[in-house]
Image (cartoon, one colour):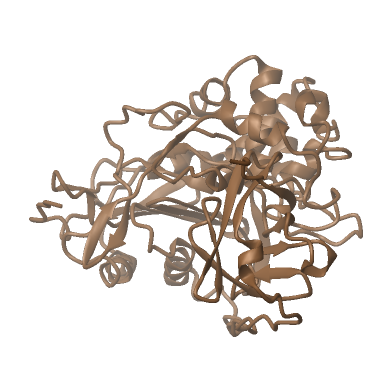
Length: 470
């Protein structure tokens, strides 16, 4: 890939919304670049960062390249795909409709989406808001059918895939299980109830009233956003385009910049759109059936750490990473938007918050060591693996899986990307990490069907495709 890098690293902007001229430099003006220039090297994709204090975007800076091919630097008006940071806008739109008397959070999802009745029994809109609905993951359903990140997929295709499901992953309210499916479905509900697309409803009801003129929801490609930063992922010693044609909204697809997000952030204090009661509801965390808190409110994580309450959310999709971290008691927020898949935007936001609030933050909690998963122990001997080799089809998944025996190893293809399997519990084949498993009936004696299990797809049945007789 050809790239022009001249001057890109040195380019950063400092914008003050309260004045047309630059104010005197502060220690933070040096410290913020120190954080990002350590991460963003010359000629690389990078990040924009905004600090919002008492309603003003006091610092807005950009580091790195928006378009490697054109050699275009990022600036503070560069627009990014916000990925899952979008979920808070979906939740806000839903609460606006409730405020208007057009729905209730305790409505069953099947009231508005009757085609999901078989798999969503007992699931309410409130369950979806708090990630306790237990529904299967639409992203896994589509990738199982061979859809890649760069492919085009549509809202209609996704609804058809979810309508095929006859069961959930688990009963509603039993566990917190972060769900893109839930927020995608909330977006569909908003569209059906309002009679507008989520993109149009949000533009009229949220973005335009707040003056967020550079913000939109992309539900069709090409998007035509002139200021859009291209998304990238590391490839060898450089970077390659990492973008998507997926058109699902609700769980993602809001596109915005630092300046518009500062306006959105301030609405949590002024309630210019909605009212105080609605904004307060955005902070109400969900509860499991057991009464345990999920610590997840309406598209927002609410957490007490270092002596202060933090309201945060990150986003991660193809070559984009994002984070908004708010500390309401200090009327302070950090916004980090990056066009590279290796950016840890939450950590970057924490580093910026440390610069400004180090005297108010308590000691950092010690990091917990990640437990390495123990290798899955084999509890049975399957014998001749060729018995399990062949093609299988799942009606609910509407997908084909192929098991191949290669030199004493069973490999899952077509519905997965060459996952190597080994014996686990009796009748079960699992990946090394245990993330994915195939469970054959009768302790593995019956090789004509299996149940597919993964974190997002629990209990999908597959049956062997019988070869036609010659």
